[in-house]
Length: 213
Image 1 (spheres, helix red, strand yellow):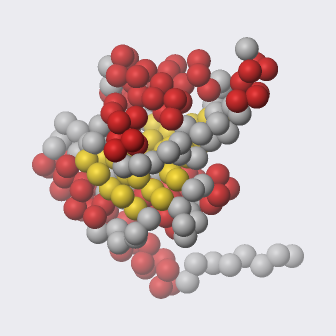
Image 2 (spheres, helix red, strand yellow):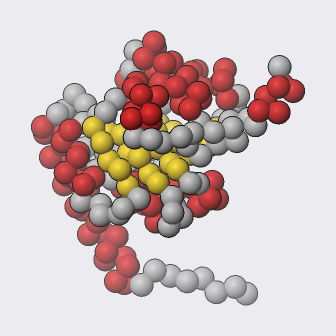
């Protein structure tokens, strides 16, 4: 029977401390800019592990994160990424920048920007086609035209064979992504406040896309 390794008490304490700190940062950001912060609760470890603990993240040379918030998912991604990889975290809410800048990892470039300007931001920061794009942007709160434009930008810049991951309260994003990527893999994360669904799409390789036309 294989052994199950349980996290040490020190690791559990560290995780609890980190989560409490992120909760305080999210609350402060909400108090400063309540219209731009979707929730007053940070992402749970169940959510961040589902997003980050993937082979596509471990193999990626570049990852782009849209809407990193207080950086819970950001830290989880960095824990799985290669030593020579790069993570560009684009956050619209300026109140979260202090929290993101506390993550002292040379692979991370946090910046204030809008996901609607994704193509321009990648060019400005000399990021080619990313292998993975992760989005916490609440697409259900955007106008249909803006949401559609962001997803189209994600599809345009993502490397063929790359992965698009979006964690959402509602399924609106599927309406915008499905015509480009096809049907998603969807997994509900109930142990999060609020419960979220993680949608995952893979962009077809060029040859496969041609065969599908």
